[in-house]
Length: 439
Ligand SMILES: C=CC1=C(C)c2cc3[nH]c(cc4nc(cc5[nH]c(cc1n2)c(C)c5CCC(=O)O)C(CCC(=O)O)=C4C)c(C)c3C=C
Ligand SMILES: [Fe+2]
Image (cartoon, rainbow, N blue to C red; front, side, top):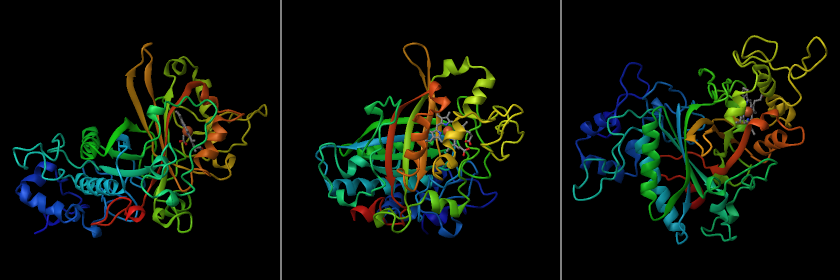
């Protein structure tokens, strides 16, 4: 009997989500776990016929790891994030990179299915450090998704070297982001050769995943920076309620919804002929650590806050309207002929009609990292957006927001970190992340 056959059906309505503890008990220890890993991690995959990768929002349920696209992009946004950027060690070569991605893929597929890494936390040889760190034992999969991305420096390092022989395969879409007016980027919180976005409904599951991938990488790659996030700041599915960001506004109302397959193909997934074949079915991730100047914002009158964003704070509706999903009319005027949505309002400058039709799949998270040395809350938005071509999408929109008729929101925010990554398409059992690039 295979490991997969021990599982409850992924979409079973009343079947409880399998926990790591339960899986451990069912498997009967290290031998079975070792055998499953030895089979290229295939046993960790769920039955393709009960594919849960885009659908399930049931807390605890696994999201299918294998498929044409990586999970964590079209997956309805989970509640928690642990995002990490990694740098490869200077002496690492192409074979080491392939070995790392192979080991990461096997571990990621197991963790997404709610299983421990390798021989597990307590079932390996007692004389050796366990393969899995153990803090997720007994926890459900919590809809964990792990999404890998390749940074610009993987293709050409800062000294212009092609360390891995892949410079010629760099997609034109992966062009370094320009500097935007007002940027205050910390290099230590920006860039990275690789990134992993871990999303889950349980923070411990997301943290466990990054911790174990970092552990596997030891000697080959190290964490450059990482960010914990909570309270998804976008609804990415029509079935999700719109959450509020740390400024108290509903965020994600006009976001692309992933059920819209045509829109996903137009705006998110790399299509055949877009660039190198290895990226077809993948997507480009832009991350921005955006600090909110919380104290000035909290001293700003409600009407001004609403003018800055261009929507009502309570309902999320456009100015003068009552429902969040009432259409946003950028030309609507008040009784004195004044624009109801201010010329500098965030939603006006970010709107596709202002940006040559550019649309993003926003998938960010709020963060709070305590207070700074002046007692100010270090909080904001860890902005994540997926797109088919950052040059046409993120860069166009951010140029509008940061440009001459600048976004009124700029007075209350500062971009302090930045990342750009090519997220390859999904993998099938037995393959590794990025195999079409490096194989
Ligand atoms: C470059 C892209 C964007 C950045 C950076 C960005 C930062 C940012 N946004 C908010 C709050 C809200 N944004 C809203 C809408 C909105 N934002 C972007 C893009 C960026 N935002 C787009 C494309 C849109 C949709 C515009 C439209 O078509 O109407 C909203 C309104 C609710 C919604 O539709 O999501 C809020 C609120 C903050 C606080 C922020 C930086 C910290
Ligand atoms: Fe926005």
